[in-house]
Length: 267
Image (cartoon, rainbow, N blue to C red; front, side):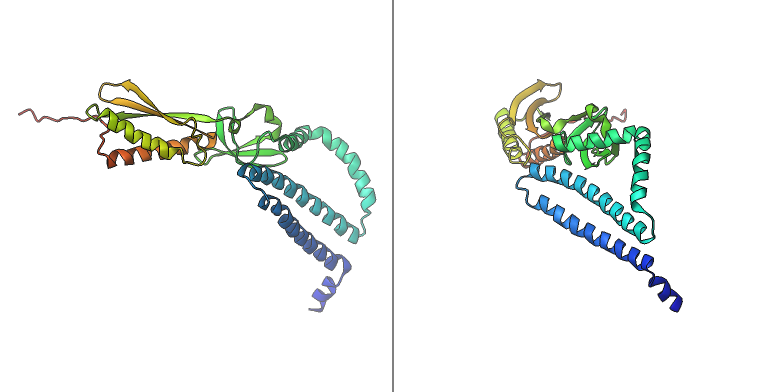
C-alpha cells in the first residue's frame, strides 16, 4: 500500500492524472457551450448549417485540448517543451511535403464549411453514388444512401460533388386504372390524393398537381400526378404517395387492373 501511495504522490503521476481529468472536464464544458449554437437556431436550414460548424469546432477543440494536455504532461517530466516545439517546426515542414493530400483535404474541408458548399443533411451526388451527408470533417465527408451504405469522400474531391439540395426535384407517378371506372370519379379521388400530398413538409404545393391521362394502355387508363419536393425526400414521398393512392382506391372501390391467367384441364 505504501508503495502505491509513494508512486501516486510523485509530482509527475498525480500531475498527469490531474491534467487528463482537467482536459476531459474542459472538453465536456466546451461541447455544452458549442451545442448551444444549434439550440438558438430558428429554422431547419440554419440548424443544419450550425450543426456542421459545431462538428468542425468540436474537432478542432478536441485536438487543441489534447495537444495542450500533452505539453503540460511533458513539462512535468522535465522535457523542454520550447525546444520540442522548435524541433516540431522543422519536422512539420518536412511532413507538409509528405502530407500534401491531407493538407488539401483540411483546406477543402474548411472551404466547404465557410462557403456553405454543402452541409450535414444535404442531398449530394458523387460520381454514381447519391445520398445524404451524415458527417463532415476536416479531412473527409461521409454520405449515406437509401440502402444505408456509407461512402467516405476525401474533401479534396469537392469539385466532383454535386449538391442536389440546391434545386427542387420532381417525380411523376402514373396510376393504371381499369377502363370501366368513371373518369370523373377517378379524377376526383386523385385530386384528393394531390391535396393531401401538398400538405407534406418538403413538397412545393404550388407546382404539385394532377396532370391528367398519360396513356390509354392495353388494359388500363393511366392517370398521372406530379409532385415537387426537396431531393432528399423524393423516394420516400413516392412510396408514401403510392400507399396513399392504393388506400384511396380501396375506399372508393376503384380497380387497378392486373394480369390474370386461366387454367383449363382439357376436358
